[in-house]
Image 1 (cartoon, one colour):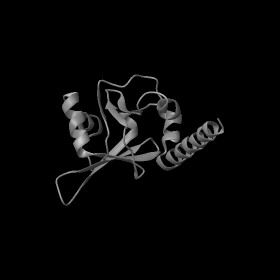
Image 2 (image 1 turned 45 degrees about the vertical axis):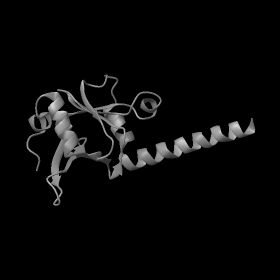
Image 3 (image 1 turned 120 degrees about the horizontal axis):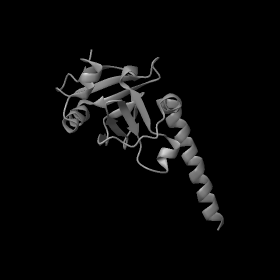
Length: 148
């Protein structure tokens, strides 16, 4: 029984440390103060398997969605969404540019989230293409203009 309690406490401590690290490094906590939403995930979204960074921290499993209202960021359902609430960032509070990898045509889109900037988000251009394909138009370009 004591092993069970010990493992449970170690798991709680580990989850707390991961939460603290993620919040302090990515800016999710600051974003959630301003952009927390209860709206459901939009119909057009992808779930990252790599190629997404928030303040240079690689994030896998992040759901990235788009709607006419803005950019939607979320983690899969409970318990993660309790700790890291879903975000809906309006298009007018996002600035972006593009980095092309010199070794290929692929690159990343760099987003500055918040006004004033709260954090940075990098999304692989292949994910942006998938979102545009599913949405039916180049929504990032339509809403944010041509990347610089």
